[in-house]
Image 1 (cartoon, rainbow, N blue to C red):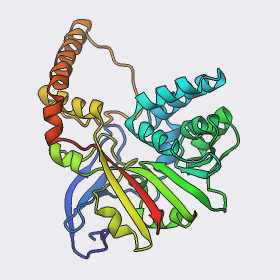
Image 2 (image 1 turned 60 degrees about the horizontal axis):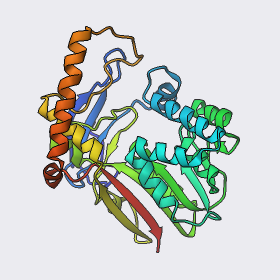
Image 3 (image 1 turned 90 degrees about the vertical axis):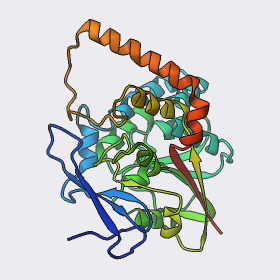
Length: 319
């Protein structure tokens, strides 16, 4: 039975694209669709599998990078190096940079909730510079780790109170029903509150002729466009949607194209195994990668005319 689009609810508007199997040694298969009406792409997960807990608790899982970042953040904060920590996060990912810039325009007396805080490093950094912020995540492994590293201001579920600001980083693309997700967390906002988040942009893989972005299901299962959020919200909210170009990411896409390789390097194995490479071949590969990077960097201003978007940053405010 063909599913319906949970974004626009238009009947019989879905186009089946493929059955996506991003991991080679785990038999996870995700039917993938695109809505002809609203343009979103989404993949279906098995409702009986707790994928997020598996990804958090397995070595080589999709969130391994979050544990690496958390360790670095813990190191900086333990040495009172908040400025260095901020610089590190700003450089590590454009989404962290955009979020930090947004929060630093707000009063420190405001109450903030980070939904999907993962290993807690963003919440921990913002608390270190004086913001009143709490974190929540559905993964018990992630929350236990965050508490062990940064303190007790993390929970599996948000506290039953209202907040001035709710933030999340890409989480809306990871939930089974984005409309229900938005509705639930917008209810936690105070009358003048606002929500800020980034969302994966469906236009990025379309431009490259790819099925998906570099974070595959079962983690990320929805890709959006600007009009998606108009379908999901009623007239009680103002929505601002900004497309953001991440220079490093855009360049790397074109490096892959120059080298005639897929940009989306999905995990080939679920549990990372040590691989032995021939040293000479590895050296040649690095050399050509650097040459391609230089070429892409030089022509970046021209590339950006054709590829000036990488992600969506969305601000929702009550009217």
